[in-house]
Image (cartoon, rainbow, N blue to C red; front, side, top):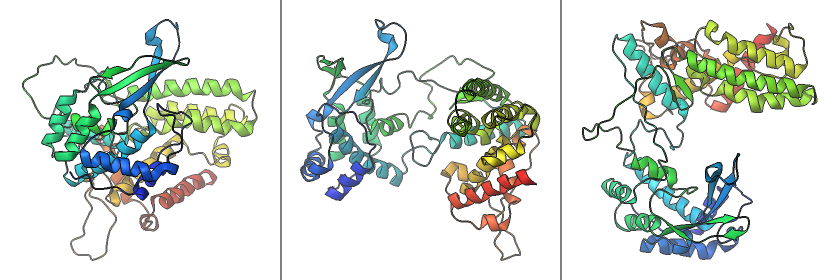
Length: 437
């Protein structure tokens, strides 16, 4: 990995990409762009010498009170503020490290956390079909879920540096990251009082730009089989994975979503008498809709009987935000605010996933699940995928099977759309149009 010199335009680009925050740091610096020339020089010196500036290693920790007794330390959440210059320098190094890991194909393809253009949906689409495919082939499936407590804060610096060197981070780039991790300090600021500086001996700095990437590299070899460690693994009927309860039918997750939606519906009912009806759709979009949408292409592609409870709660809320009676039909209510029914939301998100598959922009290991059909005797291009034959119903409702079925039935005019945004808008209009049929 080579730390090439940076220019002022690159620094300004990084600064413009940072989120604007009212908080200040140890240096109390708010305006970066006015001093871009000297800091570019400082950053280049840092990369040339492999030295991270000592003053940028200081973190201000603000204890944020949550609830309960103010005398109990456990009732405070520590918020770490790093120097703004530090974050810019980290981002510049992170960009180079990211490029290096991608170019050299270092990260495990099954690692979805903290990686650009990858999401929890991708991870779940990978896991759930693997389980159902094993069952479809009359095989056993065992998934091991490990919860690492304080994972970021207990990371061993020496072990991390050893792994970085193993992956090819050597020379000045290696010296820089060692300097970055060394001699870090923090102090607590509470009600205007600043307490003494204390050393940070392990972990990656909270709030830092490099934190997620360094941790990803640190755990990159975790999936390698080792006989050195032995654990007693507890067997459970269901477990939460990335916010979704995984079991043999996903009914536990549906019940969990139902419970959350019921609570939100009660809140909307209570406030619907106090606010104008024109404001209630905002409550729906901010409080109700996120629970419906999260990974619904994973758990919502099931029998109507399984999700009927979700559909009924959504209809109840739609009546509330319109001030309609309990037994009023909801199609015209959905149409008025252009709100999609739950089954339409699932259908839309499934098609968007398949759009990515068709345009080959999914992560590599997921893209291998979708094989395009190539006619033997026709030169005409087809948009269809090869559909897998399945034995059990649970496999039939996974995206690699049901998604392929839906995409293969799609109209050619929609398939020809190249923009995901345009495709999404067109399909939403089609779904909204069904309310008037």
